[in-house]
Image 1 (tube, one colour):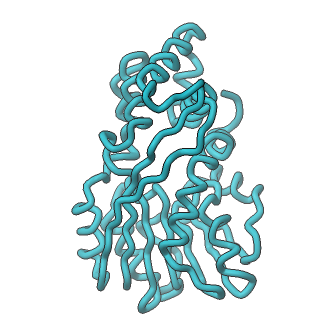
Image 2 (tube, one colour):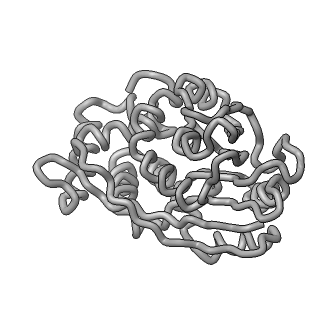
Length: 261
């Protein structure tokens, strides 16, 4: 449980999100030499996937509001493409109009306080024919791993802890997602339901690691060790259908929106 929130995010979440980053940049069809904005970049997982596709003639601007995430991101090199790390508010981007060929945003849009303003900014900074590729989790009923963690937190910690775990799934309606981009003036919007099977991993380590990377990690750390163990055991029991010989595999389901300016 030790380390900063950004360090724990990189340690415990980056490996989970790496396959999704590959999926996102592939669907965006990034071309060598393109200029890309990685919005809500976190510790740079998407930028690391994009760099080799863009090459030395391309460029990445990786932006996040959280300075600790940016500091952690700078510790991890991005191959091939030059990169700038910038602190930026998604609803008021500090970039000129028609600056980028593509804007990528992995699991960030659902957390923006003003989603409409953020999507409007994405539209503004894209060049004509530029593409926005944005992923958000589908609802918890489609994501048994997230649902199991949320239900366990609700039983053993608090109702607020449960809601914190469910927050990533709050933009699970594909029509709501599509409408954000249509209303912002994008010429075409396609929303794809995508499933990626999580690589097998030790179930206890995976669950404990994800709990450590939550915003409420300090609250979980403060639990009596026996109570925390009961929490993890309860989550393991809920995921029994996805665990074989102690190894967890779980389908992760998201919507990926591809919007053309």
